[in-house]
Length: 316
Image 1 (spheres, rainbow, N blue to C red):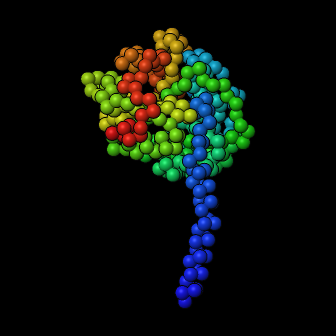
Image 2 (image 1 turned 45 degrees about the vertical axis):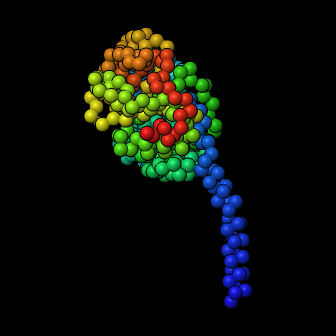
Image 3 (image 1 turned 180 degrees about the vertical axis):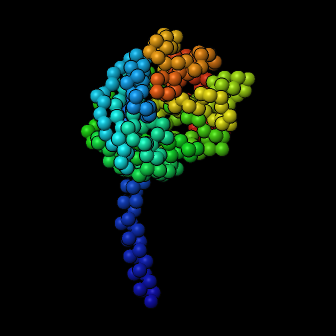
């Protein structure tokens, strides 16, 4: 019996040893850098079909750049039809959709799309970092996609192209603007930093409330940078005046006044007039079709800067 038990033990140890390299490879893959570059981060914009051309004209007149050829395609895993095109500007890219059919759930709730180097590895890494995969991987006309949700209810699409794209680098990297509650802010930041392998470049527990339409109050703000690009995390009580919370992207420009003049001439409305706080000016505009965006000039500095700040400090 002792001899048999010893044999079983040896077999078990051998099996574990044989499996260990595979487990290690899987864990290593989950930790791989899946981000490609900021110019492959696209803001998803949904407008009514009748507003597509008006939006394109206004957005490009404001920021410059060009549009890819408009196509009609199915970009969801269930039956649907939409016009689709990419608006590429020096300060940010928009994936524009004008659905001719009802939009299948949960599409339309994802704020942006991140290109990843390997969709399977990225999905595994997102799950390992604490994200929910709310739409499992599916094919689209030019690659594969999935939709993930981070703690706090932040939806993003990740995508991979069959043919590797080659986009020019941005002159100014846009800023993803993420609003989360105090209850889920730490979980969101921890999960996203783990996935993106990014870092907190600044944080303040008492950012000026005017930045979210609450003059005289304060809120917590963190700025994150990664190979995906820039992100600002705005931790609020959710009691936000319109249009705060509706803007998902902030565009950095060389001259705010000149850009706003172009926007207004091209049919956009200024919802929040320019204001300045902590050395940074900003305004919020609405383009034809309803898309709302923040616009700011190149900031002189980040408030409460803390380069390569440890995650533990950022979550306090």
